[in-house]
Length: 371
Image (cartoon, rainbow, N blue to C red; front, side, top):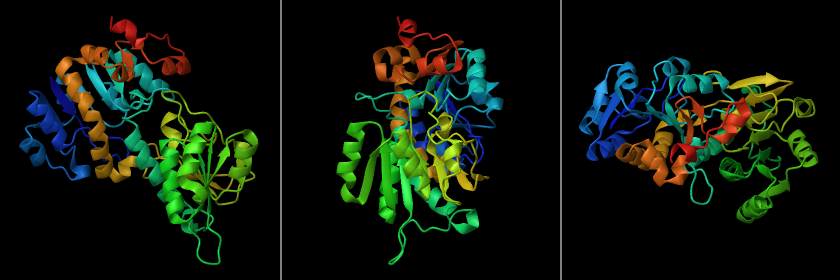
């Protein structure tokens, strides 16, 4: 199979779909790999390293979209890229379609077969291709929140860890999954006063056992959520419903009762955000203020630490890419029901139920396509 990886063009996105090491693995399996020139510069991977791995360097993205059977990316294709996709082509990347009607429509119109990293499952129901980026984003959320809390950046002027004689900052993490767990780890490590909210008793037990007295847990009902948020210095939204739009848990009304200069970091922004006042921002302009509350809603947080993120991502995406390249998408999905969960769009049909429900499309189960 001929596989291509174009340079990412989303604002301040420095990751790349294939590392030189991943390209070499594909080449060793007999596949042809095309890499757009300088696609790897954001992770310090040179064109020469890709050539040494056996890949072909092409000038610009057009040859990849025109001639490659599978396109491997990191972020969802931008509008200009979606126009280049074609029927029968495999797109393997993050998509986050539920809150993105325009992207969904254009993927359907293109006839592409789109496999989304974020909905591929694991044997215990986990999301293994999303997990490493969730780990990165969770850890980054505390770094970003700590910076936004500085007075020069519009925040309260609170040091999360405090100092002897001065109370630490209060951090509230909404959601105890992978993002929330990693955010709590970082916040606890800084010495902050950390509270984790979740609705799953098993999750609360797990994080409570892990952190012991270093963090508090609370069941996430309306009263507890309001109390925690309005007393917080930093709130991290870490809620995920696989493939679906995130629920709006922090309302505009709550902002009026929050501390002036408190910070909201919405890690769920890729799925539409879990704060009512969230709108996607970029690394170029990461924050904005509503009702004296600072909002950080960067939709590609891991792109800021591109080298770490790219290698962590390739560790989990490459095995599936090798399988798809070897077997073709249909046989690969038929052989692996977990990979089959990644199929979101195929030849003009929505094949992921949560996306179809959210955006009002007819739903075509992947199992029907694989018969």
